[in-house]
Image 1 (cartoon, rainbow, N blue to C red):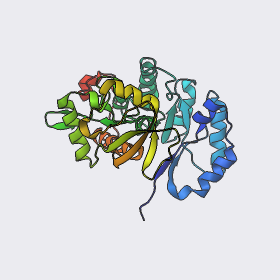
Image 2 (cartoon, helix red, strand yellow):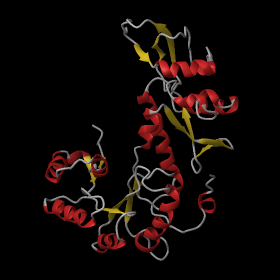
Image 3 (cartoon, rainbow, N blue to C red):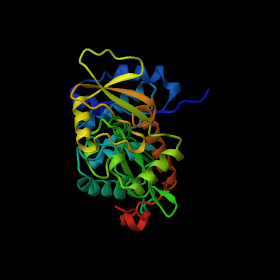
Image 4 (tube, rainbow, N blue to C red):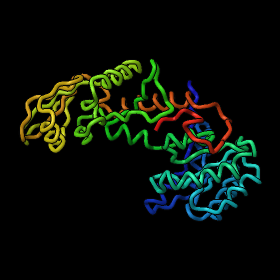
Length: 322
């Protein structure tokens, strides 16, 4: 049986944003019950209260656990980060960057100071492992020597009908520049915008994108759409397709059938979608798989940790194109 290695977040940010309280003893009980599946588990941090976060760290340790300490780099005095380092924690989580709570422009000087003065030695080599909570920016990912990061953006990308596709240059895929974020679902409003939906890319770009899908073992898929009256009962293999999305697509593409899409029988009645061929255009789980594949390839392209942090330009260090 394949071993499962999970990184467990306490969910403190989600709880904080929703005004929900997490019971620390229940959290501890959950960890102990499932410890065979969990490789790393974060402390139950209290956003905006470093003292309470530290108390939770020590409380969990008193119960026989060794949680990942969490420091909110944008909200708390750096003395708390120094405290964790002085206490010889080898792996520390940096929070306060998720949910668009701070812009890239504002976070850069903060992270520069954190890594230069506290995380790294005089040669720029990290003294501790650092996990970045909610770290989604490719530029920031490449600039700082993170040991690990997490983000829900890959999930949201798939749920909103899109997949990540690396750029293709000189006969190979490159990961040191922003990828294409290609919308493939017909339900997305991006179908109206140039260079966002698969139908709106140039013929050459679509060829490269479709070849990437093929290389990874995925197909775009096919669905048929037809109008039905309001009393229609769905049959096996059918599902409702929203009228609003259908109208917007009809006005732009009519009965276009590019790249495997089949649309026929438009009317002002309700639309039913019949899946002819499962693929990334009509199955979010397949989009999730393809996005995971992208991030695994991105991970493989990164320098092997540890590597030196220097405040030099990203273009000089990694050849990053913006």
